[in-house]
Amino acid sequence: MKYNYLFLIFLFGIYSCSSKLDRATYQKYQNTGNDISATVQATLLSNVAQAIQQGGTEHAVEFCNLQATSILDSLNQEYDCKISRVSDKNRNPNNKMRTEQEIKLWEIFKNGTLADTLIKADNNVVFYKPIRTGMPACLKCHGNPDSDIDPETFQKIQKLYPNDLATGYRLNELRGLWKIEFAGK
Image 1 (cartoon, helix red, strand yellow):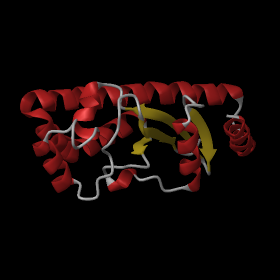
Image 2 (cartoon, rainbow, N blue to C red; image 1 turned 120 degrees about the vertical axis):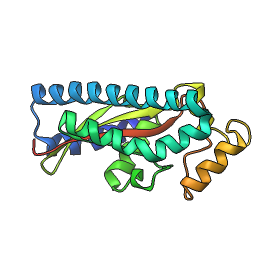
Image 3 (cartoon, rainbow, N blue to C red; image 1 turned 90 degrees about the vertical axis):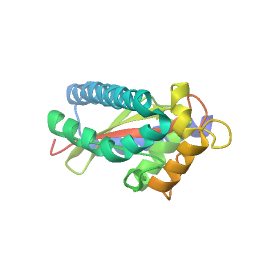
Image 4 (cartoon, rainbow, N blue to C red; image 1 turned 120 degrees about the horizontal axis):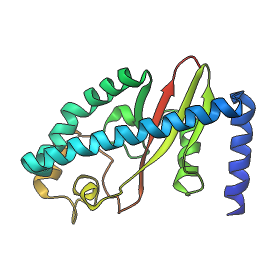
């Protein structure tokens, strides 16, 4: 625990020195990031719930494969930012963590020592917030393939995402991070 605390201080010492965001600006983007991530999460969950009602979890996997990116794209335009997800166990290859910074942040979020964070990278302000498997319905596509996911749904996941890593989760486990980039701030 002491190591995690010291690592957190070290990591945020680096970010706070390089961020050069005053308190009011930090608070503004943190509030905006929280609002956007809540809206995006609610929008995606609502659409996935509709897809499940229309055709079950197998249909929802196909819906996500075809529609999740376009939903995010429309919200990117609406909020004038770039919204994405990153994870150490990604389903979509575009959601793979790519930087050492994201890997370090992941470890902090995984340990539960951080609720969200805002950093400055180059000219961008970037907000990160955890995505958890918060409902039993999440496990229908992200749980244990042997007990939580229907065989037909698992086959659909394997077909649409041949390199899928996003299964094996338990309820309330960290599944990913929302990453919201505000350009040129």
